[in-house]
Amino acid sequence: MPSGATLVWFRDDLRVADHPALLAAVERGAPVVAAYVLDEHGDGVRAPGGAARWWLHHSLAALGDELAALGIPLVLRRGLAAELIPQLVVDTGADTVLWNRRYGPARAIDAELKARMREAGTEVRSFPGDVLAEPQELATASGAPYRVFTPFWNALRGRPVAPPLPAPDAVDSPAEPVAGDALDDWELLPRRPDWAGGLRATWTPGEAAGLERLEEFADELDGYADRDLPAVDATSRLSPRLRWGELSPRQVWHRIRREGGPHAEAFLRELGWRDFFRHTLFHDARLATRNLRPQFDAFPWADPDPAEIDAWRYGRTGIPFVDAGMRELWATGAMHNRVRMSAASLLVKNLLVDWRVGEAWFWDTLVDADDASNPGNWQWVAGSGQDAAPYFRIFNPERQAARFDPDGAYVRRWLPELGTDAYPAPIVDLAASRERALAAYESLGGRGTAPP
Image (cartoon, rainbow, N blue to C red; front, side):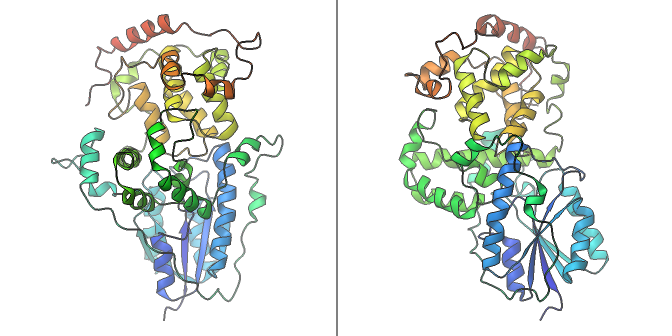
Protein backbone atom coordinates (compact mmCIF):
# COMPACT_ATOMS: atom_id res chain seq x y z
CA MET A 1 0.00 0.00 0.00
CA PRO A 2 1.20 3.54 -0.69
CA SER A 3 2.45 5.35 2.40
CA GLY A 4 1.16 8.80 1.50
CA ALA A 5 -1.84 10.47 -0.07
CA THR A 6 -2.12 11.30 -3.77
CA LEU A 7 -2.54 14.95 -4.75
CA VAL A 8 -4.34 15.62 -8.06
CA TRP A 9 -3.77 19.10 -9.44
CA PHE A 10 -6.76 20.26 -11.48
CA ARG A 11 -6.37 23.01 -14.08
CA ASP A 12 -8.58 23.35 -17.18
CA ASP A 13 -9.99 19.85 -16.68
CA LEU A 14 -12.86 20.40 -14.27
CA ARG A 15 -14.52 16.98 -14.51
CA VAL A 16 -14.28 13.49 -13.04
CA ALA A 17 -14.90 11.35 -16.17
CA ASP A 18 -12.09 10.84 -18.70
CA HIS A 19 -9.66 12.42 -16.28
CA PRO A 20 -6.46 10.34 -16.58
CA ALA A 21 -4.73 11.85 -13.53
CA LEU A 22 -7.76 11.43 -11.27
CA LEU A 23 -8.37 7.84 -12.36
CA ALA A 24 -4.70 6.96 -11.82
CA ALA A 25 -4.84 8.53 -8.37
CA VAL A 26 -7.86 6.49 -7.32
CA GLU A 27 -6.39 3.29 -8.74
CA ARG A 28 -3.26 3.90 -6.68
CA GLY A 29 -5.24 2.94 -3.57
CA ALA A 30 -4.27 5.79 -1.24
CA PRO A 31 -6.45 8.67 -0.04
CA VAL A 32 -6.87 11.30 -2.76
CA VAL A 33 -6.89 15.06 -2.37
CA ALA A 34 -7.80 17.31 -5.29
CA ALA A 35 -6.45 20.85 -5.57
CA TYR A 36 -7.19 23.87 -7.72
CA VAL A 37 -4.81 26.81 -7.59
CA LEU A 38 -5.98 30.17 -8.89
CA ASP A 39 -2.61 31.34 -10.22
CA GLU A 40 -3.00 34.70 -11.94
CA HIS A 41 0.63 35.85 -11.96
CA GLY A 42 2.83 32.82 -12.63
CA ASP A 43 5.23 32.71 -15.58
CA GLY A 44 3.24 32.17 -18.77
CA VAL A 45 -0.11 32.43 -16.97
CA ARG A 46 -2.81 34.69 -18.37
CA ALA A 47 -5.40 35.62 -15.76
CA PRO A 48 -8.97 34.83 -16.87
CA GLY A 49 -11.21 37.65 -18.05
CA GLY A 50 -14.46 38.70 -16.43
CA ALA A 51 -16.84 36.31 -18.20
CA ALA A 52 -14.40 33.42 -17.77
CA ARG A 53 -14.13 34.12 -14.05
CA TRP A 54 -17.92 33.82 -13.76
CA TRP A 55 -17.80 30.43 -15.47
CA LEU A 56 -14.84 29.27 -13.38
CA HIS A 57 -16.68 29.99 -10.12
CA HIS A 58 -19.68 27.87 -11.05
CA SER A 59 -17.62 25.10 -12.63
CA LEU A 60 -15.46 24.79 -9.51
CA ALA A 61 -18.57 24.64 -7.33
CA ALA A 62 -19.94 21.81 -9.48
CA LEU A 63 -16.59 19.99 -9.46
CA GLY A 64 -16.42 20.21 -5.68
CA ASP A 65 -19.79 18.44 -5.44
CA GLU A 66 -18.77 15.75 -7.95
CA LEU A 67 -15.53 15.05 -6.09
CA ALA A 68 -17.20 15.06 -2.68
CA ALA A 69 -19.52 12.29 -3.90
CA LEU A 70 -16.36 10.25 -4.55
CA GLY A 71 -14.94 10.96 -1.10
CA ILE A 72 -12.35 13.38 -2.50
CA PRO A 73 -12.00 16.89 -1.04
CA LEU A 74 -11.29 19.81 -3.37
CA VAL A 75 -8.82 22.21 -1.78
CA LEU A 76 -8.72 25.74 -3.18
CA ARG A 77 -5.66 27.96 -2.90
CA ARG A 78 -4.87 31.30 -4.53
CA GLY A 79 -1.37 32.40 -5.45
CA LEU A 80 1.65 31.14 -7.38
CA ALA A 81 1.32 27.46 -8.22
CA ALA A 82 5.11 27.09 -8.11
CA GLU A 83 4.90 27.84 -4.39
CA LEU A 84 1.51 26.42 -3.45
CA ILE A 85 1.74 22.94 -4.99
CA PRO A 86 4.86 22.00 -2.95
CA GLN A 87 3.13 23.45 0.12
CA LEU A 88 0.07 21.31 -0.58
CA VAL A 89 2.31 18.24 -0.73
CA VAL A 90 3.36 19.03 2.83
CA ASP A 91 -0.14 19.93 4.02
CA THR A 92 -1.74 16.78 2.60
CA GLY A 93 1.06 14.36 3.43
CA ALA A 94 1.15 13.40 -0.24
CA ASP A 95 4.00 11.38 -1.69
CA THR A 96 2.61 11.50 -5.24
CA VAL A 97 1.35 14.39 -7.39
CA LEU A 98 -0.55 13.81 -10.62
CA TRP A 99 -1.90 16.19 -13.26
CA ASN A 100 -3.05 16.32 -16.86
CA ARG A 101 -0.69 18.20 -19.14
CA ARG A 102 -1.27 21.68 -20.49
CA TYR A 103 0.30 22.95 -23.71
CA GLY A 104 0.59 26.72 -23.41
CA PRO A 105 3.45 28.78 -21.97
CA ALA A 106 2.41 27.93 -18.38
CA ARG A 107 3.72 24.41 -18.95
CA ALA A 108 7.11 25.82 -17.97
CA ILE A 109 5.76 25.98 -14.41
CA ASP A 110 4.86 22.29 -14.63
CA ALA A 111 8.31 21.29 -15.87
CA GLU A 112 10.06 23.25 -13.11
CA LEU A 113 7.74 21.85 -10.45
CA LYS A 114 8.15 18.30 -11.69
CA ALA A 115 11.95 18.53 -11.54
CA ARG A 116 11.99 20.22 -8.13
CA MET A 117 9.51 17.86 -6.46
CA ARG A 118 11.15 14.75 -7.87
CA GLU A 119 14.47 15.94 -6.52
CA ALA A 120 12.77 16.28 -3.11
CA GLY A 121 11.57 12.66 -3.31
CA THR A 122 7.96 13.18 -4.43
CA GLU A 123 6.67 11.04 -7.25
CA VAL A 124 5.25 13.24 -10.04
CA ARG A 125 3.45 12.02 -13.14
CA SER A 126 1.57 13.83 -15.89
CA PHE A 127 -0.94 12.53 -18.42
CA PRO A 128 -2.34 13.63 -21.81
CA GLY A 129 -4.40 16.80 -21.57
CA ASP A 130 -7.15 18.53 -23.54
CA VAL A 131 -6.13 17.59 -27.09
CA LEU A 132 -6.97 14.80 -29.49
CA ALA A 133 -3.27 14.32 -30.25
CA GLU A 134 -0.39 15.74 -28.25
CA PRO A 135 1.81 18.24 -30.10
CA GLN A 136 4.85 15.99 -30.01
CA GLU A 137 2.85 13.26 -31.78
CA LEU A 138 2.09 15.16 -35.02
CA ALA A 139 4.69 16.62 -37.35
CA THR A 140 5.34 17.03 -41.06
CA ALA A 141 7.56 14.62 -42.97
CA SER A 142 10.51 16.89 -42.18
CA GLY A 143 9.70 16.82 -38.47
CA ALA A 144 8.45 20.41 -38.36
CA PRO A 145 5.13 21.49 -36.83
CA TYR A 146 2.21 21.88 -39.20
CA ARG A 147 1.56 25.46 -40.33
CA VAL A 148 -1.40 24.74 -42.62
CA PHE A 149 -4.63 23.28 -41.29
CA THR A 150 -5.64 20.85 -44.05
CA PRO A 151 -2.53 18.62 -43.90
CA PHE A 152 -2.70 18.85 -40.10
CA TRP A 153 -6.32 17.71 -40.20
CA ASN A 154 -5.53 14.87 -42.57
CA ALA A 155 -2.80 13.67 -40.23
CA LEU A 156 -5.00 14.02 -37.16
CA ARG A 157 -8.03 12.23 -38.55
CA GLY A 158 -5.84 9.45 -39.91
CA ARG A 159 -4.71 8.35 -36.44
CA PRO A 160 -6.73 6.76 -33.64
CA VAL A 161 -8.07 8.97 -30.86
CA ALA A 162 -7.82 7.35 -27.44
CA PRO A 163 -11.23 6.34 -26.07
CA PRO A 164 -12.45 8.25 -23.02
CA LEU A 165 -11.80 6.78 -19.58
CA PRO A 166 -14.56 6.06 -17.06
CA ALA A 167 -15.16 8.08 -13.93
CA PRO A 168 -13.36 6.56 -10.93
CA ASP A 169 -14.99 4.73 -8.05
CA ALA A 170 -15.37 6.33 -4.64
CA VAL A 171 -12.41 6.22 -2.26
CA ASP A 172 -11.87 6.57 1.46
CA SER A 173 -11.67 10.23 2.43
CA PRO A 174 -8.43 11.53 3.95
CA ALA A 175 -8.33 11.23 7.73
CA GLU A 176 -7.54 14.90 8.30
CA PRO A 177 -9.17 17.82 6.47
CA VAL A 178 -6.87 20.17 4.58
CA ALA A 179 -7.40 23.91 4.88
CA GLY A 180 -8.26 25.84 1.75
CA ASP A 181 -9.91 29.03 0.57
CA ALA A 182 -13.65 29.52 0.37
CA LEU A 183 -14.69 29.87 -3.27
CA ASP A 184 -16.80 32.95 -2.53
CA ASP A 185 -13.76 34.68 -1.05
CA TRP A 186 -12.13 34.69 -4.49
CA GLU A 187 -14.85 37.11 -5.67
CA LEU A 188 -14.93 35.70 -9.17
CA LEU A 189 -18.56 36.73 -9.61
CA PRO A 190 -19.43 40.34 -10.51
CA ARG A 191 -21.16 42.14 -7.65
CA ARG A 192 -21.06 45.91 -8.16
CA PRO A 193 -22.52 45.96 -10.71
CA ASP A 194 -23.80 42.44 -11.30
CA TRP A 195 -23.65 42.27 -15.10
CA ALA A 196 -23.95 38.46 -15.30
CA GLY A 197 -27.72 38.14 -15.66
CA GLY A 198 -27.41 37.18 -19.32
CA LEU A 199 -24.76 34.57 -18.50
CA ARG A 200 -27.01 32.99 -15.86
CA ALA A 201 -29.92 32.92 -18.30
CA THR A 202 -27.81 31.31 -21.02
CA TRP A 203 -25.53 28.79 -19.31
CA THR A 204 -25.38 26.18 -16.57
CA PRO A 205 -21.69 25.39 -15.98
CA GLY A 206 -20.51 22.02 -14.70
CA GLU A 207 -19.74 18.52 -15.92
CA ALA A 208 -23.29 17.18 -15.57
CA ALA A 209 -24.73 20.00 -17.69
CA GLY A 210 -21.93 19.51 -20.22
CA LEU A 211 -22.64 15.80 -20.62
CA GLU A 212 -26.33 16.54 -20.98
CA ARG A 213 -25.66 19.11 -23.69
CA LEU A 214 -23.38 16.70 -25.54
CA GLU A 215 -26.19 14.14 -25.70
CA GLU A 216 -28.68 16.78 -26.86
CA PHE A 217 -26.35 17.93 -29.62
CA ALA A 218 -25.66 14.37 -30.76
CA ASP A 219 -29.39 13.71 -30.98
CA GLU A 220 -29.94 16.95 -32.93
CA LEU A 221 -26.94 16.62 -35.23
CA ASP A 222 -28.97 17.02 -38.43
CA GLY A 223 -29.70 20.57 -37.31
CA TYR A 224 -25.99 21.34 -37.61
CA ALA A 225 -26.67 21.92 -41.30
CA ASP A 226 -27.99 25.35 -40.25
CA ARG A 227 -24.90 26.21 -38.19
CA ASP A 228 -24.14 29.31 -40.31
CA LEU A 229 -27.52 30.92 -39.49
CA PRO A 230 -27.09 32.92 -36.27
CA ALA A 231 -30.84 33.21 -35.68
CA VAL A 232 -31.12 29.39 -35.52
CA ASP A 233 -30.04 27.42 -32.45
CA ALA A 234 -27.95 24.98 -34.48
CA THR A 235 -24.45 25.22 -33.02
CA SER A 236 -23.11 22.77 -30.46
CA ARG A 237 -22.68 25.24 -27.57
CA LEU A 238 -19.92 22.92 -26.35
CA SER A 239 -17.03 25.37 -26.62
CA PRO A 240 -17.02 26.59 -22.99
CA ARG A 241 -17.44 22.98 -21.83
CA LEU A 242 -14.27 22.10 -23.68
CA ARG A 243 -12.44 25.23 -22.65
CA TRP A 244 -12.93 24.47 -18.95
CA GLY A 245 -12.54 20.74 -19.39
CA GLU A 246 -16.03 19.86 -18.20
CA LEU A 247 -15.93 17.69 -21.30
CA SER A 248 -12.78 16.29 -22.86
CA PRO A 249 -12.23 16.48 -26.62
CA ARG A 250 -11.98 12.68 -26.59
CA GLN A 251 -15.46 12.36 -25.12
CA VAL A 252 -16.89 14.71 -27.72
CA TRP A 253 -14.98 13.12 -30.60
CA HIS A 254 -16.16 9.58 -29.90
CA ARG A 255 -19.76 10.56 -29.10
CA ILE A 256 -20.22 12.57 -32.30
CA ARG A 257 -18.31 10.13 -34.45
CA ARG A 258 -20.76 7.41 -33.47
CA GLU A 259 -23.49 9.39 -35.21
CA GLY A 260 -21.61 9.43 -38.53
CA GLY A 261 -22.59 11.37 -41.64
CA PRO A 262 -21.53 14.70 -43.15
CA HIS A 263 -22.68 16.80 -40.21
CA ALA A 264 -20.62 14.75 -37.79
CA GLU A 265 -17.61 15.11 -40.08
CA ALA A 266 -18.11 18.88 -40.27
CA PHE A 267 -18.23 19.19 -36.50
CA LEU A 268 -15.21 16.94 -35.95
CA ARG A 269 -13.29 19.21 -38.29
CA GLU A 270 -14.04 22.06 -35.88
CA LEU A 271 -12.49 19.98 -33.10
CA GLY A 272 -9.51 19.65 -35.43
CA TRP A 273 -9.18 23.44 -35.61
CA ARG A 274 -9.20 23.51 -31.81
CA ASP A 275 -6.25 21.07 -31.74
CA PHE A 276 -4.50 22.98 -34.52
CA PHE A 277 -4.44 26.17 -32.47
CA ARG A 278 -3.21 24.28 -29.40
CA HIS A 279 -0.38 22.79 -31.43
CA THR A 280 0.40 26.29 -32.74
CA LEU A 281 0.55 27.65 -29.19
CA PHE A 282 2.74 24.76 -28.05
CA HIS A 283 5.33 25.68 -30.68
CA ASP A 284 5.00 29.46 -30.22
CA ALA A 285 4.04 30.63 -26.74
CA ARG A 286 3.65 34.25 -27.86
CA LEU A 287 0.54 33.58 -29.92
CA ALA A 288 -1.47 36.31 -28.15
CA THR A 289 1.20 38.98 -28.29
CA ARG A 290 3.15 38.77 -31.55
CA ASN A 291 2.44 38.23 -35.23
CA LEU A 292 3.27 34.69 -36.26
CA ARG A 293 4.24 36.10 -39.66
CA PRO A 294 7.06 38.59 -39.00
CA GLN A 295 6.24 40.68 -42.08
CA PHE A 296 3.12 41.84 -40.22
CA ASP A 297 5.32 43.68 -37.74
CA ALA A 298 5.48 46.40 -40.41
CA PHE A 299 1.71 46.52 -40.98
CA PRO A 300 0.43 50.13 -41.04
CA TRP A 301 -2.25 49.92 -38.34
CA ALA A 302 -4.23 53.14 -37.94
CA ASP A 303 -3.81 55.28 -34.85
CA PRO A 304 -6.51 53.90 -32.55
CA ASP A 305 -9.58 56.08 -32.13
CA PRO A 306 -10.98 55.36 -28.65
CA ALA A 307 -14.48 56.39 -29.71
CA GLU A 308 -14.46 54.00 -32.66
CA ILE A 309 -13.10 51.15 -30.56
CA ASP A 310 -15.76 51.70 -27.91
CA ALA A 311 -18.44 51.81 -30.61
CA TRP A 312 -17.21 48.42 -31.78
CA ARG A 313 -17.00 46.97 -28.26
CA TYR A 314 -20.51 47.98 -27.28
CA GLY A 315 -22.35 47.38 -30.54
CA ARG A 316 -22.74 51.00 -31.65
CA THR A 317 -20.92 50.97 -35.01
CA GLY A 318 -24.07 51.49 -37.07
CA ILE A 319 -23.33 48.20 -38.88
CA PRO A 320 -26.28 46.06 -37.71
CA PHE A 321 -24.85 42.55 -38.21
CA VAL A 322 -21.70 43.46 -36.27
CA ASP A 323 -23.56 45.38 -33.57
CA ALA A 324 -25.95 42.49 -33.00
CA GLY A 325 -23.00 40.17 -32.49
CA MET A 326 -21.26 42.48 -30.05
CA ARG A 327 -24.50 42.88 -28.05
CA GLU A 328 -24.90 39.11 -27.99
CA LEU A 329 -21.32 38.78 -26.75
CA TRP A 330 -21.84 41.28 -23.93
CA ALA A 331 -25.12 39.68 -22.84
CA THR A 332 -24.27 35.97 -23.10
CA GLY A 333 -20.47 35.64 -23.12
CA ALA A 334 -20.67 34.05 -26.57
CA MET A 335 -21.12 35.05 -30.19
CA HIS A 336 -22.07 33.03 -33.24
CA ASN A 337 -18.93 32.18 -35.21
CA ARG A 338 -20.26 33.58 -38.49
CA VAL A 339 -20.81 36.92 -36.75
CA ARG A 340 -17.48 36.72 -34.90
CA MET A 341 -15.65 36.67 -38.22
CA SER A 342 -17.56 39.71 -39.47
CA ALA A 343 -17.03 41.63 -36.22
CA ALA A 344 -13.32 40.84 -36.16
CA SER A 345 -12.88 41.69 -39.83
CA LEU A 346 -14.58 45.06 -39.36
CA LEU A 347 -12.17 45.95 -36.55
CA VAL A 348 -8.88 44.85 -38.09
CA LYS A 349 -9.58 45.50 -41.76
CA ASN A 350 -12.21 48.22 -42.11
CA LEU A 351 -10.99 50.17 -39.06
CA LEU A 352 -7.35 48.99 -39.30
CA VAL A 353 -7.17 48.43 -35.55
CA ASP A 354 -4.42 46.06 -34.36
CA TRP A 355 -5.89 42.58 -33.87
CA ARG A 356 -4.51 42.47 -30.32
CA VAL A 357 -7.07 45.10 -29.26
CA GLY A 358 -9.93 42.87 -30.34
CA GLU A 359 -8.32 39.76 -28.93
CA ALA A 360 -8.06 41.40 -25.51
CA TRP A 361 -11.75 42.41 -25.57
CA PHE A 362 -12.84 38.89 -26.50
CA TRP A 363 -10.56 37.54 -23.76
CA ASP A 364 -12.50 39.56 -21.21
CA THR A 365 -16.02 38.93 -22.54
CA LEU A 366 -16.06 35.34 -23.86
CA VAL A 367 -16.86 32.51 -21.47
CA ASP A 368 -14.82 30.20 -23.73
CA ALA A 369 -11.74 32.42 -24.21
CA ASP A 370 -8.57 30.34 -24.04
CA ASP A 371 -4.86 30.81 -24.69
CA ALA A 372 -4.93 29.08 -28.07
CA SER A 373 -8.19 29.50 -29.97
CA ASN A 374 -8.85 33.13 -29.06
CA PRO A 375 -5.57 34.59 -30.38
CA GLY A 376 -5.37 31.92 -33.07
CA ASN A 377 -8.71 32.98 -34.55
CA TRP A 378 -7.85 36.67 -34.33
CA GLN A 379 -4.58 36.12 -36.16
CA TRP A 380 -6.47 34.06 -38.73
CA VAL A 381 -8.79 36.98 -39.48
CA ALA A 382 -5.96 39.53 -39.45
CA GLY A 383 -3.87 37.42 -41.82
CA SER A 384 -0.90 37.36 -39.46
CA GLY A 385 -1.28 33.79 -38.22
CA GLN A 386 -0.97 30.20 -39.36
CA ASP A 387 -3.09 29.22 -42.36
CA ALA A 388 -4.69 32.66 -42.17
CA ALA A 389 -7.47 34.14 -44.26
CA PRO A 390 -6.20 35.71 -47.51
CA TYR A 391 -5.44 39.41 -47.16
CA PHE A 392 -8.08 40.26 -49.75
CA ARG A 393 -10.80 38.42 -47.80
CA ILE A 394 -12.60 41.26 -46.06
CA PHE A 395 -15.95 40.20 -44.71
CA ASN A 396 -18.70 42.54 -45.84
CA PRO A 397 -21.15 42.47 -42.92
CA GLU A 398 -24.06 43.66 -45.07
CA ARG A 399 -23.58 40.79 -47.50
CA GLN A 400 -23.06 38.39 -44.61
CA ALA A 401 -26.37 39.54 -43.10
CA ALA A 402 -28.18 39.20 -46.43
CA ARG A 403 -26.88 35.67 -46.83
CA PHE A 404 -27.07 34.31 -43.29
CA ASP A 405 -29.78 36.45 -41.66
CA PRO A 406 -32.01 37.15 -44.67
CA ASP A 407 -35.16 37.97 -42.70
CA GLY A 408 -33.25 39.97 -40.08
CA ALA A 409 -34.37 37.81 -37.16
CA TYR A 410 -30.95 37.74 -35.53
CA VAL A 411 -30.32 41.44 -35.90
CA ARG A 412 -33.78 42.38 -34.56
CA ARG A 413 -33.27 40.14 -31.52
CA TRP A 414 -30.24 42.14 -30.38
CA LEU A 415 -30.98 45.62 -31.82
CA PRO A 416 -34.51 46.57 -30.77
CA GLU A 417 -33.80 50.24 -31.59
CA LEU A 418 -32.85 49.45 -35.22
CA GLY A 419 -34.73 51.73 -37.61
CA THR A 420 -35.23 54.47 -35.03
CA ASP A 421 -33.32 57.67 -34.30
CA ALA A 422 -31.70 55.88 -31.34
CA TYR A 423 -29.62 53.70 -33.66
CA PRO A 424 -26.35 55.36 -34.77
CA ALA A 425 -25.19 56.06 -38.30
CA PRO A 426 -22.30 53.89 -39.56
CA ILE A 427 -18.91 54.93 -38.20
CA VAL A 428 -17.13 53.70 -41.34
CA ASP A 429 -17.81 53.49 -45.06
CA LEU A 430 -17.49 49.80 -45.89
CA ALA A 431 -16.46 50.27 -49.53
CA ALA A 432 -13.90 53.03 -48.92
CA SER A 433 -12.42 51.29 -45.88
CA ARG A 434 -12.12 48.09 -47.87
CA GLU A 435 -9.97 49.86 -50.43
CA ARG A 436 -7.86 51.37 -47.64
CA ALA A 437 -7.37 47.93 -46.11
CA LEU A 438 -6.34 46.40 -49.44
CA ALA A 439 -3.78 49.16 -49.89
CA ALA A 440 -2.42 48.52 -46.40
CA TYR A 441 -2.08 44.81 -47.03
CA GLU A 442 -0.53 45.38 -50.43
CA SER A 443 2.08 47.56 -48.73
CA LEU A 444 3.44 44.26 -47.42
CA GLY A 445 3.96 43.22 -51.02
CA GLY A 446 0.64 41.35 -51.22
CA ARG A 447 2.33 38.50 -49.43
CA GLY A 448 1.01 39.17 -45.96
CA THR A 449 -0.73 35.84 -45.74
CA ALA A 450 1.47 33.59 -47.84
CA PRO A 451 2.45 30.45 -45.91
CA PRO A 452 5.99 30.78 -44.55
